[in-house]
Image (tube, rainbow, N blue to C red):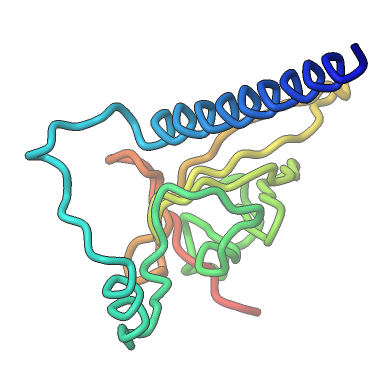
Amino acid sequence: MALKGDLQSKTVWVLFTWALIATVGFGWVLGKRSISGPPRPAESRPATKPIAAATASALSTTAPVSRGAPTYPQFVSSIPKPFRGRWDELVSDKCKDREARFTLGGRTLENFEVRWDVTKVKLYSPTEMDLFVTTKDDNASQVDDVFQFKLADGGQSLTGRKPGTDFFQRCPKG
């Protein structure tokens, strides 16, 4: 009787092993199909190269890898350097203190008596951005706002991104 029990346990283990292998294999096939998408008709499948030929052609490529141009829109954490500086509607008087003057720093926007902290910057191009800022009002409540800027005149003027907004000129240094 002991021989019959050993044979039964071996048979159970063999069947269990085969079932496990079949389950893993079936799961792999299903997983592969879900990653590659639904099967395509034979005529629309791309022609495949033998592995050795594909590897050889990939290794023979000597073109340098380029990073390419930046893609927009993109978010950055500080104001880009071309936008930084003092800006005013009147530069003929060397940008005397007025409410219309403002200063863009790396992480701040200052306008008259208000200092705004930059939370993020959304760049639409090297010359256009949305500036997300926050500050506290007189009651210590948080105020969030978005300013839209566009560089013009080769970076010497700053305006809003929408047509018809005011132009500010870069203040002379000093």
